[in-house]
Length: 459
Ligand code: UDP
Image 1: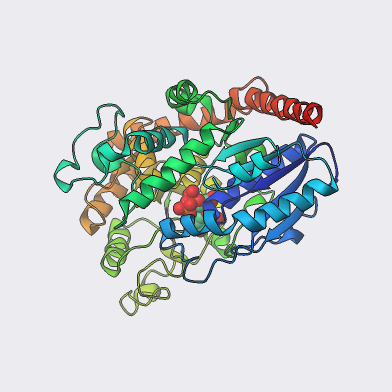
Image 2: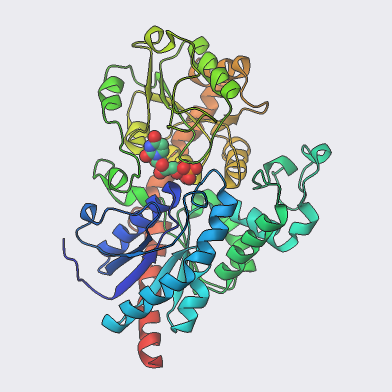
């Protein structure tokens, strides 16, 4: 594939898995639309350029220390990143602009520090929002009226948020922090610098989130480009996910899945950042075993607080589940969800996981941990109705009951599975010729080219 095609775009991802994946998928989509691509990445979670010989890469030394880069304190990480990267990013941009013209910068919305730097160079900046539009409506409400919601009172958790139906107070996109004001500040900056961008790119599609996209179009006077699902612009087996994976994906689980009947296996993964307690881990283990359905379980090293990997499991657990359960450290998730043996996805509802499940028509058990996951879970269970949420935390009885309901002959379970298949079809249609995401992509390409013209005239 050619490295130098048309006008050059600079893309800057937030360096965590759930943001790197969609940014690199977007890079791939834009490269296929005749743009040249340069990815600017941090030294923390740095990318491997040899996986993408058709892109240029530029690494900035973020200077973030090991403690600051601990993504278990996401809030502190975001603050440090947005402070420490300003200087090296400025130097990097100055150098790149002195070498060749650049059409625009596409920045992750959470890298809000990029806006002022781009403005200082007169470089147009678009934003990639890697979460869904519905959660962004909630983020925007929090950012603009945050003082009214934060801090959240325990006694009000079940109350409905009247202006954000069907969210309850407990579904608001919060994180566990002793410093809610800092969280509010990060949200405010991200929303504000999205508003002042020249366009927002979404990894979603119109039919899925039309009303949230319409709300945002009214609130933000910048063009919106819902061109998702990004990963479905390419065939599932084209390796895009393994290339951008920070942890090696265990491919052996595909051979294990091949031995199972269609729609018979429960896939369990809580993504790249969430962590759980030892008690919760053991409840999951018992719930899975008691459900009597085969399961493929991603236990990421560090998932359980205070443990390296599987140590909290009772001795003999792994041997006893032989054949019926398979545990891996990290999996080729997109391939797994597309595999015919998968009948159910137990997810933390990170946006990528949610969308990947929707695209394969796989119903979900929702167990959100923080931020947008809570909104996504509510939408999965109460708007799209393609899953059920575990409302009482991780409790083995409820886990077993929910798995059985969705995997066995229950009427509600069947309705959920039928709706999941219908949504899968809608996701397919939007990418076809004349489909909404396909048209939005055409608009995006034209928009970027018009920015370039603007840039050229201004210089
Ligand atoms: N993923 C993966 N292997 C795994 C678990 C997850 O490749 O074992 C990928 C998944 O396909 C998704 C991303 O990691 O693209 C996780 O992003 P998401 O937004 O779902 O959650 P986050 O990790 O940001 O919480």
